[in-house]
Image (cartoon, rainbow, N blue to C red; front, side, top):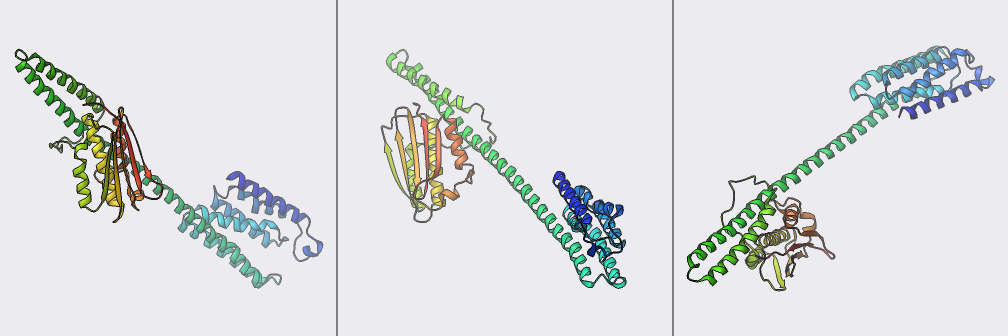
Length: 385
């Protein structure tokens, strides 16, 4: 900015020099003195300091006002250099705090107005209109500078507030991710514990019938192998997740796709009409996929109930494919697109669903659908159980 201010100062000084050098003889007769070395020096003093008006506004104002005072007191011909006065007052108001700018600017303005009023009294060439002009040329730029300062301060506060809110939003998002990972870790812990229990029971049964029924013992060993495979798969997904809350783990059996009908009944009792469709052969899926698919349906329907409106209708599609499981939940509500948040109350929401699906190696897409409403689609690799 100092380069811009310097360019303005040099331009004003140049125009002032040209104006002083080309004053008509008829105009020079109105003043006591003709332009000489000191006239040009005072013109420079009223213009060149403006290059530093943002850095040293008080010093610049003092130099410009003093130069203007001596220029008028010595009665040199008027020039464009006097424009430096409103520039200096404006810089004072825009660069200093409100109270300090007024404490300094008002005395300087009062001094120039009083000096001009004395000229009206002692000099016939000065009229009261000049006093009004000086009053406007000092007070108006000062007040305008104050408005610029207040606007700049307001914008700065808005930027700081926006940065603070952004940091808080990011922190809340991280906290939601941590909470969701802790919940998922607890659920996967229960899944793995279930598989280990199955392995223990099957091993005990195989030991009892090993001598009397080898075929049955072989079946039990096959079941142990399958359960162990699934347990290891879930344990790999569990690695890296920090279990933050050990005291609030749920001890009841974990839900799965087999319980979606009951979930839909609950939603319909609460006022949300739901159509449920399955495609493909259900077969078996791993316990982790089964659990998290249920949770995605549960969270999506909950959001539809909360934000879809009183007459919203939802649909649930579960498609079983050889290599993956697709879950699609859609509604025709009016508020889901605006109400679905990254932290849906109990730690779920879009962040939670993304965490669940990405942990299982799948993908999730969520957003408004054409014609209104909201749609959530999750594709999860299908593992046997």
